[in-house]
Image (cartoon, rainbow, N blue to C red; front, side, top):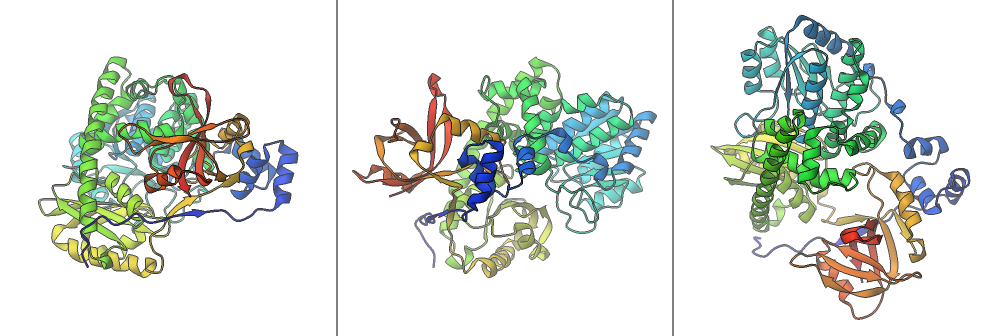
Length: 575
């Protein structure tokens, strides 16, 4: 049955965590003198041991494991030390997203400081394609490289690496992507996800691997290790942008990286902050993810990622400001192109037969391959199903997929790999290349794979609730204590609170031409303002003439136009 009207959005279901043991909460409160609400949240997230709580709330660089724990590290360091000493050309080959750019910039800066002859290279998304491929091989051979060091790619580039090795070029892979088969045969593969790697933390973005390699090479050559730590701003930027879980070592790296970023030592990051209108505001993981990263990503999506790399490598403030302005314009173009493509994709989704809506595959001739990942994320958010968006050019489709928590996207695509030219990624996100003539068969097989797993679970938009509170809990003291949970991101989400039977105190009003709503709720100490940007149908509950509502929200500080007050950032409202 074909549908001609937009499907209704799936219902939102609140997911409340199971009850915790009161004794665990009381013990943390007694021993650490923390707000009881915070103690309950810690226990809910699995922190019942006092020492583990202290380590979580007060990250230390000493919590990082030694670089040598990564399989292949000693061989990689030895080869790079020899290359630097002999004056060989080292190609640092990155990927065209923020993680690839930052990893490439970090390794380039460190190896050059150690005296290395380094030429960075990032392929063009449209003309060169993903990963280390023919373009990277040509660049390396053209520069008579002795070593090619990858950054955020290479784990699956067995053909290109074999070609380089046959030509006498040594290859070192530094990457974090899940291997789709045997890892390449080369000097070293630094990837915690490869079989046999003893590294205890498998969650690093590629920049975390690059950081550890930079530390190890610097230590081996007796260089200034302190300089490597000044590049933690790049580590924080890429780790957050790549949606790496902010737990374990990533939490430590981002915690200290944000401190370095606040000092704005890197002229490129300083210019990016200024052009993003974040100057003077606290730099948080959220502002990296939603404001800084998209602007840097725009270089690789609609332009050339080498432009973004130039921003991170320049020491000239004037050049940095010029590049940052260019990226601002590219980001505006990305937003416009993405909005048009999203509308087109949803029209195509609405026209799909019901039986093809379990694993969504949508494609079109002329879609821009640089924004398919962004569009895929928005489609998944709308329909609550895994989705793959494919841009077709010259009978070749380049696809990007995003998933829901209950579906392993990499495994789902792997089950249909006979239709594909290549693919790679992980559980939540993946990319692929496909002959356009195979798209319909791939759509059917991928959808069937998803159907087998999801047909018993109708689309439901889940709203996680961490804690239910009462209005008396909503104080600046609580907000200050909640900030100890930062940095927030995947694996350590911003706490979501819920108020039951809240009384609307301020009549809701629409915010300009947006879908946002501003209102307020009654508390014992007076009204507390609230704002909701994407409430959609849920906002109607606020318009009821009387009666309480249940609200899910994030507690935040409102400093707009000089304000200094608490504010509820509304996520959902139930009448």
